Image (cartoon, rainbow, N blue to C red; front, side, top):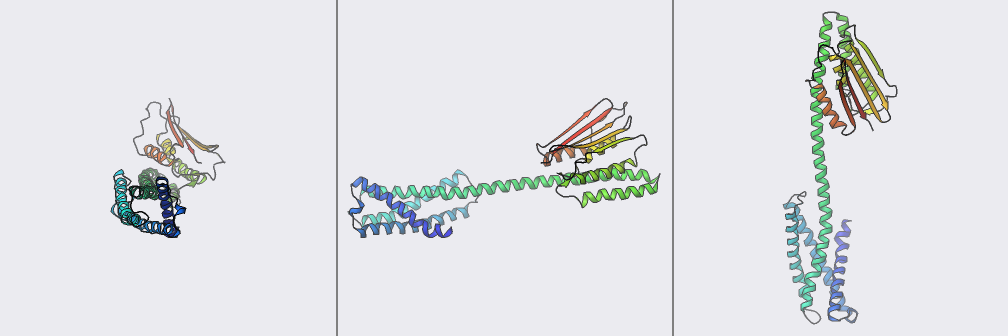
Amino acid sequence: MKFFWKYIFPPLYGLVVYATIRVLLDTVTGMRWWHRSLSINLSDLVACILFSYAFIAAFHRLLRWFDKKWPANDLSYGRIWREVFYLWLLNLLFQNALLTTYCALTDDGLQWYDLVDVNTIPLLYSLIFYGIVRSNTFLKAHIASKIQLEKITNDQLLTELKFLKAQYHPHFLFNALNTIYFQMDEDVSAAKQSVEKFSELLRYQLYDQQQTVPVSQEIRYLDNFIQLQQTRSSEKLQLDVCFDERLNGQQIYPLLFLPLVENAFKYVGGSYRIKIAAGLQESVIRLEVENSVPAEIPLKKEKGIGLDNLKRRLELLYPDRHTLTTQKKEKDFAAVLTLQYR
């Protein structure tokens, strides 16, 4: 392609310029180019081709100078007008230094229509050529600018996600360690088992986490967490857990179910009942968490970071592909999360 633009295109450009000038001159003067001698026609053609080689080389040098002087992503009208102005000056110089001089030395000398044609036709084609070349360059610059903007935006989102995860881990650690702390005074053996269970949970967060994970892996993690919470829960707790067997290889982002389950254990009261169910509905995964609350104590709005963190992560990871609803009933609090995984 470089060979074409460097060696093939200039003579083709010169032929088009020459043919256009020749047609206009013959129309104005009544001359017929085939009535002229072959040597004169060939000399005219050679002159236009040489002019094209010289002009296009200077044209590309001018564009490279602009590219060095101004950044490639500068798509302002000011830059375009400056380039067009310099292109006009370049045409003025080459046309009058080469073509006008040549016309003055051939045929019947330099006529007014020769001057008009020589100063308008090459300029017209050079502007068309400029538009073709620069539209490609500016399009690439525009695409590169868009890609760079998207990269910066993605980097910001990834940074925010990492911050949210880093913020969530201490929240999880506090609750898990608090559970083990209460066990130490009652049953050291059970506390050791809780530490082992806790280490499995932590290993999943630190080592087994991918960008997305199979939902079955997330459910196993949830099971471990529920078992850990059961060890510190009251014997009055009525726990109902149901996971759809079809939830297997569907890919989801990790650690999105846990905040709702964690809050259920944190705020359970009254009849001490917790219901956790996850199911599959076509391309939507649905998690329902419901817990009873103390009748005499109104449920306070969550002031910690758990739900706020979850809402922000959902906005970043599942924009327009999730719903999260919470509802306070007389004796229960219910939360429903849906994720469209494809």
